[in-house]
Length: 384
Image (cartoon, rainbow, N blue to C red; front, top):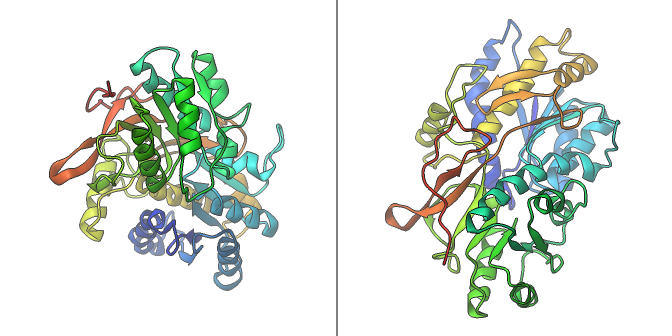
Protein backbone atom coordinates (compact mmCIF):
# COMPACT_ATOMS: atom_id res chain seq x y z
CA UNK A 1 0.00 0.00 0.00
CA UNK A 2 1.31 3.42 -0.94
CA UNK A 3 0.31 6.62 0.85
CA UNK A 4 0.59 10.16 -0.48
CA UNK A 5 1.26 12.32 2.59
CA UNK A 6 1.68 16.09 2.84
CA UNK A 7 4.86 16.46 4.88
CA UNK A 8 6.08 19.83 3.62
CA UNK A 9 4.28 22.93 2.39
CA UNK A 10 1.04 24.50 3.53
CA UNK A 11 -0.76 21.16 4.13
CA UNK A 12 2.00 19.67 6.27
CA UNK A 13 -0.12 19.66 9.43
CA UNK A 14 -2.83 17.73 7.61
CA UNK A 15 -0.24 15.05 6.92
CA UNK A 16 0.55 14.51 10.61
CA UNK A 17 -2.42 12.22 11.41
CA UNK A 18 -1.92 10.04 8.34
CA UNK A 19 1.80 9.64 9.00
CA UNK A 20 1.00 8.72 12.61
CA UNK A 21 -1.56 6.13 11.50
CA UNK A 22 0.95 4.62 9.08
CA UNK A 23 3.56 4.30 11.82
CA UNK A 24 1.06 2.94 14.32
CA UNK A 25 -0.26 0.22 12.02
CA UNK A 26 2.87 -0.72 10.04
CA UNK A 27 4.17 -3.39 12.51
CA UNK A 28 0.75 -5.00 12.85
CA UNK A 29 0.16 -5.08 9.12
CA UNK A 30 3.64 -6.51 8.45
CA UNK A 31 2.76 -9.44 10.71
CA UNK A 32 -0.23 -10.13 8.49
CA UNK A 33 -3.95 -9.52 8.39
CA UNK A 34 -6.06 -12.58 7.60
CA UNK A 35 -2.81 -14.34 6.84
CA UNK A 36 -1.60 -11.71 4.39
CA UNK A 37 1.18 -9.24 5.28
CA UNK A 38 0.78 -5.66 4.06
CA UNK A 39 3.80 -3.41 3.52
CA UNK A 40 3.35 0.36 3.77
CA UNK A 41 5.31 3.01 1.89
CA UNK A 42 4.75 6.76 1.55
CA UNK A 43 5.88 9.78 -0.42
CA UNK A 44 5.57 13.52 0.24
CA UNK A 45 3.10 15.42 -1.96
CA UNK A 46 4.84 18.68 -0.98
CA UNK A 47 1.30 20.11 -0.71
CA UNK A 48 1.36 20.58 -4.47
CA UNK A 49 -0.55 18.89 -7.34
CA UNK A 50 2.61 18.21 -9.34
CA UNK A 51 4.29 16.82 -6.24
CA UNK A 52 1.25 14.62 -5.63
CA UNK A 53 1.39 13.18 -9.14
CA UNK A 54 5.12 12.49 -8.76
CA UNK A 55 4.47 10.79 -5.42
CA UNK A 56 1.94 8.43 -7.02
CA UNK A 57 4.33 7.60 -9.86
CA UNK A 58 7.18 6.88 -7.43
CA UNK A 59 5.04 4.68 -5.19
CA UNK A 60 3.90 2.58 -8.14
CA UNK A 61 7.26 2.45 -9.92
CA UNK A 62 9.71 2.23 -7.02
CA UNK A 63 7.64 0.55 -4.29
CA UNK A 64 5.35 -1.62 -6.37
CA UNK A 65 2.27 -0.20 -4.65
CA UNK A 66 -0.92 -1.96 -5.70
CA UNK A 67 -3.18 0.48 -3.82
CA UNK A 68 -2.83 4.20 -3.04
CA UNK A 69 -4.36 6.15 -0.14
CA UNK A 70 -4.42 9.93 0.29
CA UNK A 71 -5.95 12.69 2.40
CA UNK A 72 -7.45 16.02 1.29
CA UNK A 73 -6.26 19.23 -0.04
CA UNK A 74 -8.60 20.75 -2.61
CA UNK A 75 -5.92 20.70 -5.28
CA UNK A 76 -3.77 17.81 -4.09
CA UNK A 77 -6.45 15.15 -3.65
CA UNK A 78 -7.85 15.37 -7.22
CA UNK A 79 -4.29 15.23 -8.56
CA UNK A 80 -3.66 11.97 -6.70
CA UNK A 81 -6.95 10.47 -7.86
CA UNK A 82 -6.45 11.49 -11.48
CA UNK A 83 -2.92 10.04 -11.50
CA UNK A 84 -4.30 6.74 -10.21
CA UNK A 85 -7.02 6.72 -12.87
CA UNK A 86 -4.37 7.17 -15.56
CA UNK A 87 -2.16 4.42 -14.14
CA UNK A 88 -5.04 2.06 -13.35
CA UNK A 89 -4.25 1.80 -9.62
CA UNK A 90 -6.99 1.54 -6.97
CA UNK A 91 -7.05 4.72 -4.88
CA UNK A 92 -8.90 5.56 -1.67
CA UNK A 93 -9.05 9.12 -0.36
CA UNK A 94 -10.68 11.21 2.36
CA UNK A 95 -10.59 14.65 3.93
CA UNK A 96 -12.56 16.75 1.43
CA UNK A 97 -16.20 17.10 0.36
CA UNK A 98 -17.06 14.37 -2.11
CA UNK A 99 -17.91 16.97 -4.74
CA UNK A 100 -14.24 17.97 -4.85
CA UNK A 101 -13.40 14.32 -5.52
CA UNK A 102 -16.09 13.78 -8.16
CA UNK A 103 -17.40 16.92 -9.82
CA UNK A 104 -14.14 18.81 -10.24
CA UNK A 105 -12.71 15.75 -11.97
CA UNK A 106 -15.46 15.59 -14.57
CA UNK A 107 -17.76 12.98 -13.07
CA UNK A 108 -21.12 12.64 -14.80
CA UNK A 109 -24.42 11.20 -13.54
CA UNK A 110 -24.48 7.44 -14.00
CA UNK A 111 -20.76 7.24 -14.75
CA UNK A 112 -18.33 6.37 -11.96
CA UNK A 113 -14.58 6.46 -11.97
CA UNK A 114 -13.00 3.07 -12.48
CA UNK A 115 -10.16 3.14 -9.96
CA UNK A 116 -10.79 5.90 -7.44
CA UNK A 117 -12.92 5.87 -4.27
CA UNK A 118 -13.58 8.46 -1.59
CA UNK A 119 -15.26 8.88 1.77
CA UNK A 120 -16.14 12.10 3.56
CA UNK A 121 -19.12 14.46 3.50
CA UNK A 122 -20.85 16.70 1.01
CA UNK A 123 -21.04 20.44 0.60
CA UNK A 124 -24.78 19.97 1.05
CA UNK A 125 -24.09 18.30 4.41
CA UNK A 126 -21.96 21.26 5.52
CA UNK A 127 -24.69 23.66 4.39
CA UNK A 128 -27.33 21.77 6.39
CA UNK A 129 -25.26 21.82 9.60
CA UNK A 130 -24.39 25.50 9.17
CA UNK A 131 -28.02 26.44 8.41
CA UNK A 132 -29.09 24.66 11.58
CA UNK A 133 -26.72 26.91 13.51
CA UNK A 134 -27.79 30.09 11.66
CA UNK A 135 -31.32 29.36 12.80
CA UNK A 136 -30.19 29.75 16.40
CA UNK A 137 -29.67 33.43 15.47
CA UNK A 138 -33.14 33.53 13.91
CA UNK A 139 -35.17 32.24 10.96
CA UNK A 140 -34.58 33.24 7.34
CA UNK A 141 -31.14 34.78 7.74
CA UNK A 142 -29.30 36.86 5.16
CA UNK A 143 -25.87 35.24 5.13
CA UNK A 144 -22.67 36.71 3.69
CA UNK A 145 -20.45 34.27 1.75
CA UNK A 146 -16.71 34.55 2.30
CA UNK A 147 -15.63 32.21 -0.49
CA UNK A 148 -12.38 32.25 -2.46
CA UNK A 149 -11.99 32.26 -6.25
CA UNK A 150 -10.39 28.78 -6.42
CA UNK A 151 -11.77 25.27 -6.78
CA UNK A 152 -13.18 25.37 -3.26
CA UNK A 153 -15.15 28.54 -3.89
CA UNK A 154 -16.43 27.24 -7.22
CA UNK A 155 -17.66 24.06 -5.56
CA UNK A 156 -19.46 26.02 -2.84
CA UNK A 157 -21.21 28.07 -5.53
CA UNK A 158 -22.31 25.02 -7.54
CA UNK A 159 -26.00 25.58 -8.38
CA UNK A 160 -26.94 21.96 -7.76
CA UNK A 161 -24.45 20.54 -5.26
CA UNK A 162 -23.31 23.67 -3.40
CA UNK A 163 -24.82 25.70 -0.57
CA UNK A 164 -27.63 27.51 -2.38
CA UNK A 165 -30.17 24.69 -2.85
CA UNK A 166 -29.93 23.57 0.78
CA UNK A 167 -30.13 26.97 2.45
CA UNK A 168 -32.75 28.38 0.08
CA UNK A 169 -35.04 25.47 0.96
CA UNK A 170 -34.72 26.51 4.61
CA UNK A 171 -35.59 30.14 3.86
CA UNK A 172 -32.12 31.69 3.97
CA UNK A 173 -30.62 34.17 1.48
CA UNK A 174 -26.96 34.11 0.43
CA UNK A 175 -25.00 37.27 -0.39
CA UNK A 176 -21.99 36.37 -2.55
CA UNK A 177 -19.84 39.38 -3.53
CA UNK A 178 -17.54 37.15 -5.61
CA UNK A 179 -14.39 35.26 -4.83
CA UNK A 180 -11.19 36.62 -3.32
CA UNK A 181 -7.69 35.41 -4.05
CA UNK A 182 -5.72 33.65 -1.32
CA UNK A 183 -3.91 34.87 0.66
CA UNK A 184 -6.18 37.88 0.93
CA UNK A 185 -4.81 41.41 1.15
CA UNK A 186 -8.08 43.08 2.13
CA UNK A 187 -11.84 42.65 2.30
CA UNK A 188 -13.12 46.22 2.02
CA UNK A 189 -15.39 45.52 -0.97
CA UNK A 190 -16.82 42.36 0.56
CA UNK A 191 -17.44 44.05 3.91
CA UNK A 192 -19.24 46.88 2.13
CA UNK A 193 -21.54 44.44 0.30
CA UNK A 194 -22.34 42.62 3.53
CA UNK A 195 -23.22 45.91 5.26
CA UNK A 196 -25.46 46.97 2.38
CA UNK A 197 -27.30 43.62 2.55
CA UNK A 198 -27.74 43.82 6.32
CA UNK A 199 -25.94 40.55 7.03
CA UNK A 200 -25.22 39.59 10.62
CA UNK A 201 -24.16 36.01 9.84
CA UNK A 202 -21.17 35.09 7.66
CA UNK A 203 -20.18 31.71 6.28
CA UNK A 204 -16.91 30.77 4.66
CA UNK A 205 -14.09 28.32 4.14
CA UNK A 206 -11.23 30.72 4.75
CA UNK A 207 -7.82 30.13 6.23
CA UNK A 208 -7.38 31.30 9.81
CA UNK A 209 -5.25 34.24 8.67
CA UNK A 210 -7.79 35.40 6.07
CA UNK A 211 -10.71 35.01 8.47
CA UNK A 212 -8.89 37.04 11.11
CA UNK A 213 -8.20 39.78 8.55
CA UNK A 214 -11.85 39.83 7.47
CA UNK A 215 -13.16 39.96 11.04
CA UNK A 216 -10.81 42.77 12.01
CA UNK A 217 -11.73 44.86 8.96
CA UNK A 218 -15.44 44.14 9.45
CA UNK A 219 -15.32 45.46 13.01
CA UNK A 220 -13.37 48.53 11.90
CA UNK A 221 -16.05 49.23 9.28
CA UNK A 222 -18.89 48.82 11.78
CA UNK A 223 -20.12 45.42 10.55
CA UNK A 224 -21.00 43.28 13.56
CA UNK A 225 -21.26 39.58 12.88
CA UNK A 226 -23.35 37.66 15.36
CA UNK A 227 -22.09 34.31 14.07
CA UNK A 228 -19.43 33.05 11.66
CA UNK A 229 -19.63 29.48 10.35
CA UNK A 230 -16.40 28.34 8.80
CA UNK A 231 -15.00 24.98 7.74
CA UNK A 232 -11.53 24.10 6.45
CA UNK A 233 -8.71 24.85 8.89
CA UNK A 234 -11.08 25.88 11.68
CA UNK A 235 -12.29 22.30 11.91
CA UNK A 236 -8.98 21.57 13.66
CA UNK A 237 -8.66 22.06 17.42
CA UNK A 238 -6.36 24.99 18.21
CA UNK A 239 -4.83 24.85 21.65
CA UNK A 240 -3.24 28.26 21.30
CA UNK A 241 -4.61 31.74 21.76
CA UNK A 242 -6.95 33.05 19.07
CA UNK A 243 -5.16 34.91 16.26
CA UNK A 244 -5.26 38.68 16.34
CA UNK A 245 -8.56 39.69 14.77
CA UNK A 246 -10.57 36.68 15.99
CA UNK A 247 -10.63 37.53 19.68
CA UNK A 248 -14.25 37.49 20.85
CA UNK A 249 -15.51 36.24 17.48
CA UNK A 250 -18.41 33.78 17.63
CA UNK A 251 -17.14 31.02 15.35
CA UNK A 252 -18.83 27.69 14.64
CA UNK A 253 -17.61 24.90 12.42
CA UNK A 254 -18.30 21.38 11.18
CA UNK A 255 -17.37 18.33 13.24
CA UNK A 256 -16.77 14.95 11.61
CA UNK A 257 -14.68 13.16 14.26
CA UNK A 258 -13.76 13.58 17.91
CA UNK A 259 -12.51 11.29 20.69
CA UNK A 260 -16.14 11.19 21.88
CA UNK A 261 -17.39 9.42 18.76
CA UNK A 262 -18.38 5.90 19.91
CA UNK A 263 -16.51 3.92 17.29
CA UNK A 264 -13.76 1.28 17.21
CA UNK A 265 -11.09 0.28 14.71
CA UNK A 266 -11.82 -2.74 12.56
CA UNK A 267 -8.14 -3.69 12.77
CA UNK A 268 -7.31 -3.61 16.49
CA UNK A 269 -10.53 -2.57 18.28
CA UNK A 270 -8.98 0.75 19.32
CA UNK A 271 -11.63 3.27 20.40
CA UNK A 272 -11.73 6.84 19.17
CA UNK A 273 -10.86 8.05 22.68
CA UNK A 274 -7.84 5.74 22.91
CA UNK A 275 -6.64 6.72 19.44
CA UNK A 276 -6.67 10.40 20.39
CA UNK A 277 -4.94 9.66 23.71
CA UNK A 278 -2.23 7.59 22.02
CA UNK A 279 -1.68 10.29 19.40
CA UNK A 280 -1.05 12.88 22.05
CA UNK A 281 1.21 10.69 24.16
CA UNK A 282 3.25 9.66 21.11
CA UNK A 283 3.54 12.98 19.31
CA UNK A 284 3.11 15.49 22.13
CA UNK A 285 0.46 17.26 20.03
CA UNK A 286 -3.32 17.50 20.53
CA UNK A 287 -5.64 15.35 18.45
CA UNK A 288 -6.91 16.64 15.12
CA UNK A 289 -10.21 15.81 13.48
CA UNK A 290 -8.44 14.16 10.48
CA UNK A 291 -6.95 11.56 12.85
CA UNK A 292 -10.08 9.38 12.79
CA UNK A 293 -10.53 9.42 9.00
CA UNK A 294 -6.78 8.87 8.51
CA UNK A 295 -6.93 5.69 10.56
CA UNK A 296 -10.16 4.62 8.82
CA UNK A 297 -8.51 5.22 5.45
CA UNK A 298 -6.00 2.47 6.22
CA UNK A 299 -8.68 0.23 7.70
CA UNK A 300 -10.72 0.29 4.49
CA UNK A 301 -7.69 -0.15 2.24
CA UNK A 302 -6.41 -3.09 4.29
CA UNK A 303 -9.88 -4.63 4.25
CA UNK A 304 -9.93 -4.44 0.46
CA UNK A 305 -6.43 -5.86 0.07
CA UNK A 306 -6.98 -8.73 2.45
CA UNK A 307 -10.47 -9.73 1.33
CA UNK A 308 -10.02 -9.36 -2.43
CA UNK A 309 -9.80 -12.69 -4.25
CA UNK A 310 -6.28 -11.73 -5.35
CA UNK A 311 -4.64 -8.75 -3.61
CA UNK A 312 -2.15 -8.42 -6.47
CA UNK A 313 -5.00 -8.07 -8.99
CA UNK A 314 -5.89 -4.39 -9.15
CA UNK A 315 -9.27 -5.17 -10.72
CA UNK A 316 -10.16 -7.42 -7.77
CA UNK A 317 -9.05 -4.79 -5.23
CA UNK A 318 -11.06 -2.04 -6.96
CA UNK A 319 -14.14 -4.28 -7.09
CA UNK A 320 -13.81 -4.98 -3.36
CA UNK A 321 -13.48 -1.29 -2.52
CA UNK A 322 -16.66 -0.56 -4.44
CA UNK A 323 -18.68 -3.04 -2.38
CA UNK A 324 -17.11 -2.34 1.03
CA UNK A 325 -19.30 -1.77 4.07
CA UNK A 326 -17.05 -1.53 7.12
CA UNK A 327 -17.34 -0.26 10.69
CA UNK A 328 -14.22 1.83 11.41
CA UNK A 329 -12.90 4.14 14.11
CA UNK A 330 -14.47 6.99 12.07
CA UNK A 331 -17.86 5.28 11.82
CA UNK A 332 -19.64 2.99 9.36
CA UNK A 333 -18.39 3.46 5.80
CA UNK A 334 -20.76 2.11 3.17
CA UNK A 335 -19.62 2.43 -0.43
CA UNK A 336 -22.80 0.79 -1.67
CA UNK A 337 -25.05 3.59 -0.38
CA UNK A 338 -23.86 6.63 -2.33
CA UNK A 339 -24.67 9.54 -2.71
CA UNK A 340 -22.89 8.61 -5.96
CA UNK A 341 -20.96 5.51 -6.89
CA UNK A 342 -17.52 5.06 -5.31
CA UNK A 343 -18.38 7.44 -2.43
CA UNK A 344 -19.24 6.77 1.23
CA UNK A 345 -20.48 9.44 3.64
CA UNK A 346 -19.48 10.50 7.15
CA UNK A 347 -22.23 12.36 9.07
CA UNK A 348 -21.54 15.87 10.31
CA UNK A 349 -22.47 17.67 13.50
CA UNK A 350 -21.71 21.23 14.62
CA UNK A 351 -19.08 22.66 16.96
CA UNK A 352 -18.10 26.06 18.28
CA UNK A 353 -14.84 27.50 19.51
CA UNK A 354 -14.87 28.48 23.17
CA UNK A 355 -12.24 30.04 25.44
CA UNK A 356 -10.25 27.37 27.27
CA UNK A 357 -7.48 27.25 29.81
CA UNK A 358 -4.59 29.65 29.35
CA UNK A 359 -6.31 31.59 26.56
CA UNK A 360 -6.61 28.51 24.34
CA UNK A 361 -9.59 27.87 22.07
CA UNK A 362 -11.43 24.58 22.54
CA UNK A 363 -14.08 22.95 20.38
CA UNK A 364 -17.47 22.29 22.02
CA UNK A 365 -20.19 20.18 20.36
CA UNK A 366 -23.31 22.34 19.93
CA UNK A 367 -25.50 20.46 17.43
CA UNK A 368 -25.99 16.72 17.05
CA UNK A 369 -29.05 16.23 14.82
CA UNK A 370 -27.27 13.68 12.61
CA UNK A 371 -25.60 11.85 15.50
CA UNK A 372 -28.02 12.18 18.44
CA UNK A 373 -26.17 9.49 20.40
CA UNK A 374 -23.24 11.91 20.81
CA UNK A 375 -24.12 14.30 23.62
CA UNK A 376 -23.69 18.03 23.10
CA UNK A 377 -21.21 19.90 25.29
CA UNK A 378 -22.94 23.26 25.23
CA UNK A 379 -25.48 25.51 23.55
CA UNK A 380 -24.43 27.60 20.57
CA UNK A 381 -23.66 31.17 21.61
CA UNK A 382 -24.11 34.13 19.27
CA UNK A 383 -23.26 37.80 19.47
CA UNK A 384 -25.77 40.48 20.34
